[in-house]
Length: 155
Image: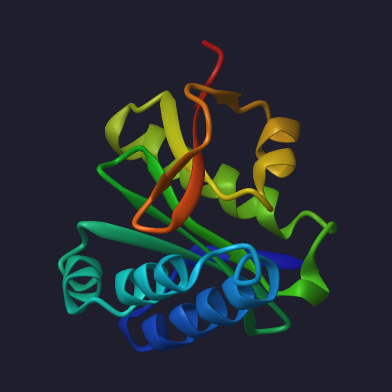
């Protein structure tokens, strides 16, 4: 059974470890050296941790038997950021549970019903299955490859 909750301050480092490990496993080989470095710098930027500590960047963790196995972040109340799930937990609903928990929180707290994400090439099919729609063609910025997408909760 998967439990999803906001992570605690002491769990931030573990969340970034999952993010980095999973990024390298599923995305690292298609990114240029510049892209890998840009991604690493983003997740290790002290500003990201500061935003997390101030409550401006929310991180939800997925836990199985008490072990964190995936994360999803929200910035600007409705932008899904850093969705990563360890390989052993793919295709069993962990990613979906993280996404919909984040949506539920944003809807309940901020009345947000439209969400955006910059989907990596590996995750594009996953987001399409959840109902996300592309809002632009694939973009490469600072070596990071993504497709802007959005999801709207039906009223």
